[in-house]
Image (cartoon, rainbow, N blue to C red):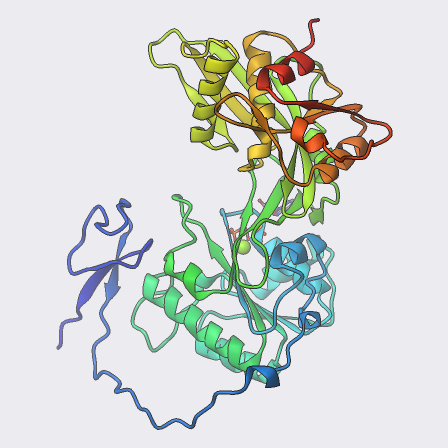
Length: 451
Ligand SMILES: Nc1ncnc2c1ncn2[C@@H]1O[C@H](COP(=O)(O)OP(=O)(O)OP(=O)(O)O)[C@@H](O)[C@H]1O
Ligand SMILES: [Mg+2]
């Protein structure tokens, strides 16, 4: 009997090796090489006798209106206005975060025919979940199957507008000897789905698990194949979830969708600022409110800092939701320009609510929160503070200032501190005092109360 050949493939970068290695030499990740069977048999020869198929660009008709609405505004926004016919979307997230819930809820609200293919649950379990989520739709079709050939036949006979595959790790192609969940199976199944989707113009939502290392399992290569990669994030201890596009061929990657998880499913959060500020405690030091722009929406959030003396040599710097290197820069600016002695202190920084912010406009709020905790002076509770901080301690202007001010005013704040340069040509907003600052020290004097 012929011996089956084995190779080892990295689940992160698809690097192949004839022997097992602890560390992938290509991407330097540990324990990512998994065993795969090598396909043997005659190689297919390419043929070049197909008819010429190119068409004039001007003859192609396509419309933004063609997008399929998922029925969930927050989801549509992240997708760039809905699902593009013929596109493949990868929905990734930690186990139990709510991927199947989101997929089923959106499937039930779509006006078009939807086929939900589950490889993880039985039809009875799906029915029970649907009852819990109060889902009922004439367009919603369910299939419990894992063999892709059978699924494609099912798609051909139903002709759905949207196909949901939950999850790609459970699917397999019978012509391949590898077991489901291996790099080869995941890649081949996705490629076939992609091919079918483009040919028959249906959209596919592929659910994928995220491994412990945060990779959309297994292979990174999947992210290159699909059109859109959407990550469903959230802290398991918090009820809210954030949907974020990592890659989008048909829309922006800045938009986020915010949801809250309840027993009867996910509900959209129309005003995330209210949610993020809802747990703000009484007047305490180290807490400052800022206004960030996520995509096209302003979101108010609380920046929390805790500065403590460091008794053991190396002071600690820990950040949640904020770039670690950016924090180091801001600490150096504070030390040099604002006379803040931080070299022998531990600094803990947190964007409350578990959001991740990489906008420089929150710099000034980060500096103010750190100063508030260091000098033990609470920040004014009714103020919002915005601005990018330069290395000279100067406050630099930021974009979308009007939107940020309006959001602060809407949520009842009475004062907003903004970069001086943003004040130029700005109309006064009734109901909110707008103060311009040009130096980080000036901002601190304004925001830190003496009581
Ligand atoms: N009976 C229930 N009552 C309340 N909440 C529930 C119930 N069952 C599930 N949930 C909630 O739904 C979440 C699971 O959602 P879902 O199954 O959609 O996640 P998933 O991302 O698809 O998970 P997996 O990766 O395991 O497929 C749970 O974490 C829990 O918060
Ligand atoms: Mg699931």
